[in-house]
Image 1 (cartoon, rainbow, N blue to C red):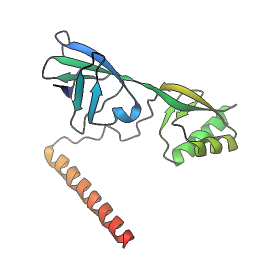
Image 2 (cartoon, helix red, strand yellow):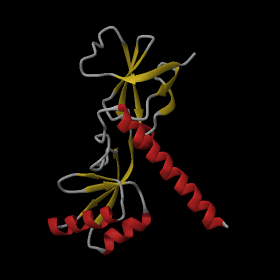
Image 3 (spheres, helix red, strand yellow):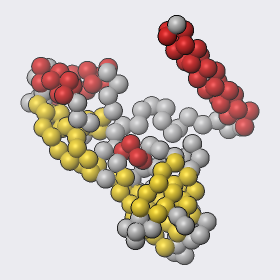
Length: 178
């Protein structure tokens, strides 16, 4: 029987009674709300969270059976984008952001997921590209995980608007295929 982790621990939770295990997940896996994982003990586990709960590196998930699961960021293949001077690096940030590329920013480099087209663009713009393996924690964006409403009516409105957007998208795809 898998352990079901169904909530995110809060900083006020006392974790002393929990058996804490650790699992390393890649960036894409940490974006999911439903995920099956194998624990280091060999036991199967399921992560089943509400859509508004985020899994970041360091997040601790809890089960109703007294288990806790600490999430680590798994190293993955990335490209390190750098430049000889800050002006060129800033220009590279602009061009990558203009293409909505997920990026992890450092003072002297930009880290992106491997993409040969983007690597070529970076080199044409005067940057250097080198492969690295690191945990990927890209910038979340201005509205990520911070856009919440205080009452349920506002949440219901957001949900309805999301459905409207989905219906419009489906209709557009049907119209384009006819």
